[in-house]
Image (cartoon, rainbow, N blue to C red; front, side, top):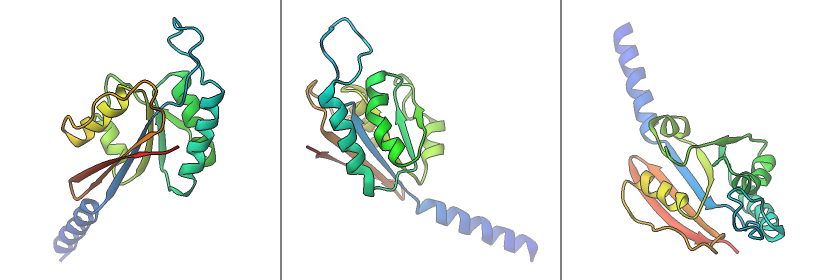
Length: 163
């Protein structure tokens, strides 16, 4: 009887986990300071700081479990208002090792914001989708939001422009 109970518990856990929904919200950093073209790690400019706070307003009604950023000033500054609003610490990801097994495991069943760059954001989405669906973003595009949902192993995506 004990073995049967254990087996039923295991089946229940597996069944519940298979219905988990994972949602990724992926954005590019807000407008950066372009006054020094040789600066590879610039801060956000004043327009970018406003956009970063507008992202926080957008995500106000979204239950986020985690906020990820690449290790650049502009991505961290874009993520900071949303992370602060949600009382979350910004976690860092390596753009050279996106969507690895560890990231997949710790984000399973969660809603996650990922702040990246014009090339890494669509590349990250493509890795999640396991297909080359999106190209690099236009360098002036700081308002696209990629939403990827995984439920029962089915992956869907959409792009929304947030002004």
